[in-house]
Every structure is written in C-alpha cells, then in structure tokens.
Image (cartoon, rainbow, N blue to C red; front, side):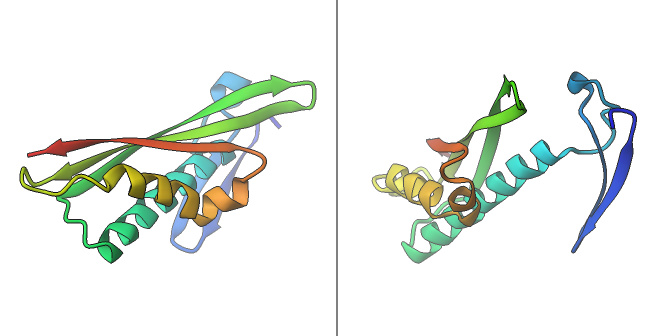
Length: 131
C-alpha cells in the first residue's frame, strides 16, 4: 500500500493520490486527508460568501487558511479537528458588526461540516482587514 499510487477522477477533479510521505508513502499528488480539508475549506468559504450575499454584507475578497489536527490511535491515524482561519477584506467604510456572527453561521451551515459532525471538530475564526 505504501508503495502504491492511483488516479482519482470525479467530476472536474482529476488528480493522482498516494499515501503521504510522512506516513511512509510516496507522497505523490494528494491524499484523502487533503481532499477532506479542501472540501471543508471550500464549503465553508462558499457558505460564508452566500451568507454575506443574503445579509448584504459588502466585502472585497475572502481568504481562508484551513488546518487539520491528527492523532495516531491503535486503529490508525484519525482526523480530530479542522480549523478555518478566514480573512475578510472590506472597504475602509464597510460595516463589520455582524461579520464574526456570520463566520460562526458558515461554520455551522456548511454541509461538509455537518457530514463530519460527531467525528471531527470543526471551528472557524476570522479577522477583518479594512482597506
């Protein structure tokens, strides 16, 4: 298994995958853990943008940095948590009062977060940058 690699195709996604190097694998392409974190990050970001649109929150751009925490258990590695750190870039005159509340709503409203609920702790925090 550690020597293997494969191809993944799903919709528009086409990528190679293998066991990560830090787990003794080839480290080619992506791996399932990275796919889960990227799915959670993109879902969170899309959900936040939709909430902002619905609530008429004007922003210039959004950036998210998502990290995962893992633990080695007797049954193998386990993903414990995913944390999203979002930066909301706003106009210098933009209204920032509800932004933290909407970040929490996006954390709870994302369907990937809901799918992982009970198995992986999902959290989000943010900073507002007014330009």
